[in-house]
Image 1: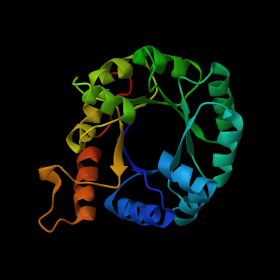
Image 2: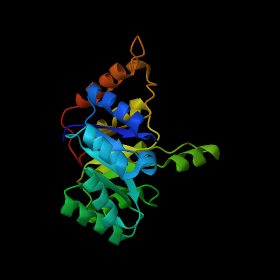
Image 3: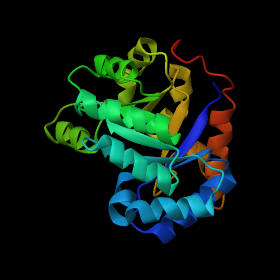
Image 4: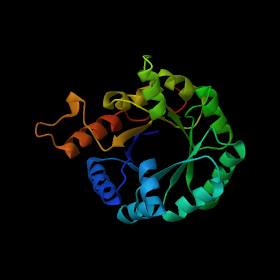
Amino acid sequence: MKPIVQISLDLTNIDEALETAALAMRAGVDWLEAGTPLILAEGLHGVRKLREAFPGVPIVADLKTMDGGYLEAEMMAKAGATHVVVMARAHAETIKCVVQAGRDFGVKVMGDNMVCPDMVEGAKWLEDLGCDYVIHHIGYDERRGIAAAGHRMPSPLDQLREVVQAVRVPVQAVGGLTLEQAIRCPEFGAPLVVLGAPLTIDADAFKTADGDLESSLRLICEKIHAYGDVAVGQA
């Protein structure tokens, strides 16, 4: 599978999200994500606006669904999303409902293993229930809380190879990755690379002389796409 660059629009204003998305698409990003903050702020309206502005682009709706799975997935599909996110910690019936809605309305389902007691088993569980992708995710609050207690901040890279080898579906790693780490995800067998927005280009290697954000993002996309085919499930 060829690497895919996804930008997470973790913004709370649709106009700013549209502006950032346009910049990202010009730079070579493949997928747009209506991040959870954007969905909370703008809801279906935000997804519809993204679809109107970018008619041929895959759009991930990061719902983090925990209940009411069929209706949530149906609503986002009809608004223009091509991918929806359900949590592994949801009831099995919720995950099954999201998967069924995905089949009924032509959207792909991404299962998120955040806060699973066993992250590898959580990923396998999501695949077994029919998810098309696995998101291996260390949450924001979890990372900050552990670091505040004086412990090493966990990273999705810690178990990424194990997760990749445990499932047959494509894997995405999310949660506190630096740009350098995100760019390396295909080396671990995870072809879906997420870049967070608002964008902060903090890697010296990707800073352009004039500080042009779009040019920096283009360099990042080119580096990720240069990996070529990634053997899914065989890191």
